[in-house]
Length: 59
Image (cartoon, rainbow, N blue to C red; front, side, top):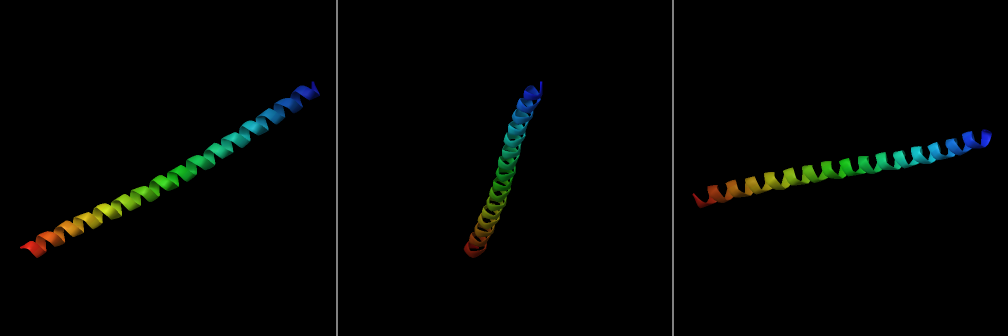
């Protein structure tokens, strides 16, 4: 009976460890997505400013 409890505890620890790894990966992915969103926003802002400057210069 004790062996079953110990075996179950080991399996649960492994599951917990894998869940923690998955959570860390998801956190890293969320950070990467956020960084990409910021970069995309900056690129879009830069493109808009550039196109406005071209219009002003051409007028």
